[in-house]
Image (cartoon, rainbow, N blue to C red):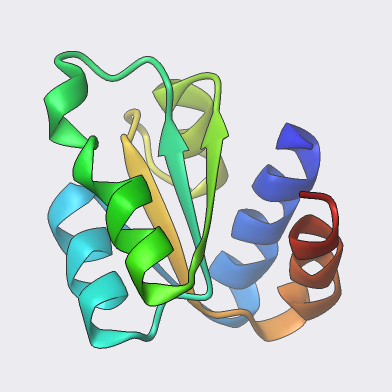
Length: 104
């Protein structure tokens, strides 16, 4: 599952739009423009991202957890780790997102 999520982020980064970081991700969920939200499990303290899954559920957005913020940052094209990424325009990641949404 994680590979598909990283693939979707990489494709969306190249052909669509992504938002990185807790604040940016929170904003796009609240606006209703997030298509997929990905949160890293190894966040310290966990309070930083605790609100994201709840907000996603409230807004009907799929929220996926991945193992590490370093890998999530790398998929988003960052030299450092990031705790959260949201895909706002899927671009060529549309089919991969469909697969992720089916594989609940």
